[in-house]
Image (cartoon, rainbow, N blue to C red; front, side):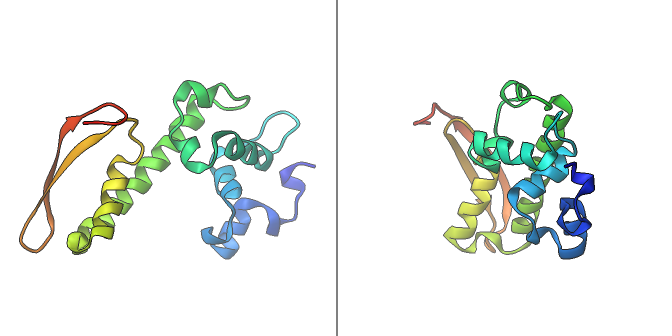
Length: 150
């Protein structure tokens, strides 16, 4: 059965519009960005397969282009779209953290640094320069290392 034949309340895009993005599963959210499935498989099955194969959304978003595009029905266009979504969400998080007195707790600082460096394949020594109100003035990557040392 094609996704278009499903009741509107069960289709990811319509479900998002009716109930909000938080009501969708990871596979349903991913399906909205993938837009189409492959011959004989609807987009929701494709999304579920990708989540399983890559170990979750983070694995999909951090996959090398060659690995991602090697899957049937996936190409550079879908890869570019997901990379743009990933970058957009990271920038949104950084913007939120920077607008607030973001660096007044170690937890908030950790979330900021994870948003900046979380997808890196090697260690980075990052220096944050703060003013006396704990607001970010500048940041600089001082050293790049191997997987286990900088």
